Amino acid sequence: MGKRAVLLLAHGTPGNVDEIPEYLRNVVSGRPMPQVVIEEIQHRYSLIGEPKGHSPLTDLTLEQARLLAAELGEPVYVGMRNWRPYIADTVKQMRADGVEEAAVICLAPQNSRTSVGLYRRAALAEAGGIRMDFLEGWAGEPLLIEAFAERLRPVYERLSREAGKAVPVIFTAHSVPLRTVQPQAAAEGGPKLWPGSEATPDPYAEEARLTARLVAERVPEIVDWRFAFQSQGASGGPWIGPSVEATLDELAAEGVKAVIVQPIGFLCDHVEILYDIDIAFKDYAAKLGIRLERAESLNASPLLTRALAKLAGEGFARLAT
Image 1 (spheres, rainbow, N blue to C red):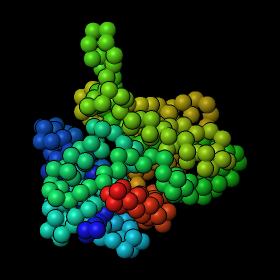
Image 2 (image 1 turned 90 degrees about the vertical axis):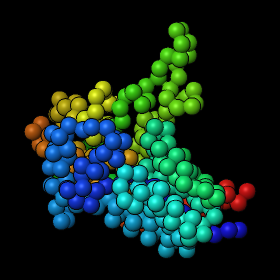
Image 3 (image 1 turned 90 degrees about the horizontal axis):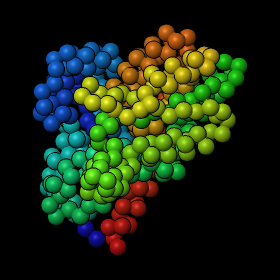
Image 4 (image 1 turned 30 degrees about the vertical axis):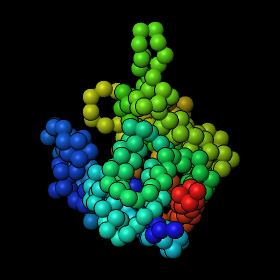
């Protein structure tokens, strides 16, 4: 058996506000972005992190890798799609270190061919002689579900007690442009095909809802839960919904006064949590007369570490066959 390692793949985030223009060019593959959008994103970053303007995503991802390496006793590398350390540079380093086999896990549990697929292509493009087992998705991994449930239970019990009744839960995942997942007619009157090489639906939306449903089942005290997509982008065309804002409007119309949000599409804190949920959605809810609280992110969760160790072990086993 050759030298083996784990490769964790994540979205990436700039280290400070000044790096955001370069980061955004990576996100949109160099396409022009309006200055007003750049400034709005810089403003959002300026309100989060310690020190302010610093997203913790990279730091937390590197910590998740450190914990996993300690759990497995195997080297763990981290590659980012849109920021340093870039996936290509990390895989080159793995080759230089003599890695021959790698279990590759994308830190986005819900698979989408149009996003996770980009991670896969970036890793394989630099793999050279490294044999890679790339995990497509792990939305229903039991240890992941329990990790989310573990974070949800305390805030659910406390807020329900303070409200005097069971409060609703909104599970969220990052929205994507509708054009990336909507079916398109292959020919006049012909079957509908989805983007990608396979004539099957992109799994992202259903996998996100699957994770939400399984977490809700692990916390059976929950009486009412909803699912919504968050953080719709500024690019042209519609993004998949329902949105968090629309869901909050529905809850307000039902007389709800308190709600919990749990983002089940993210594994650690970053701007879509620390700004979008903790600032923007909380403010939106307050204007509707709703108290909004959030379940703590997984971050350094021991259960998450165990989940990643289990997945890596399964990847190594597939490579051995």
